[in-house]
Image (cartoon, rainbow, N blue to C red; front, top):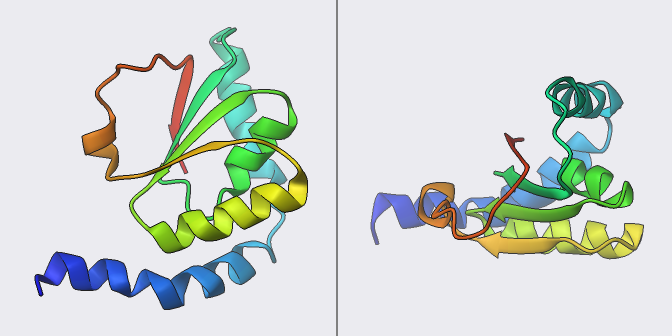
Length: 116
């Protein structure tokens, strides 16, 4: 097994703990900062790309505001938890399991792209 593959396997344990850990924080300041950047540059579109979305906390917040969110992460375990979090919040997000450098072909167009 290549070292790279082994690193992804470690996410199966890490993902649960990460979700629990991140949920203990008030992320509203970070989210407000992202919204401020979007507003500062008068970005009007509704399509957002979250690079390295993890368990989807920021993606969910944008989706709750009515944005069309695509969220990319290389860990299927993180995306599995993100999908569960999304269902709990009753929002829709398009999840992609891939390395961001592989996904960014710009076939899709986004008005706002950020890395979380």
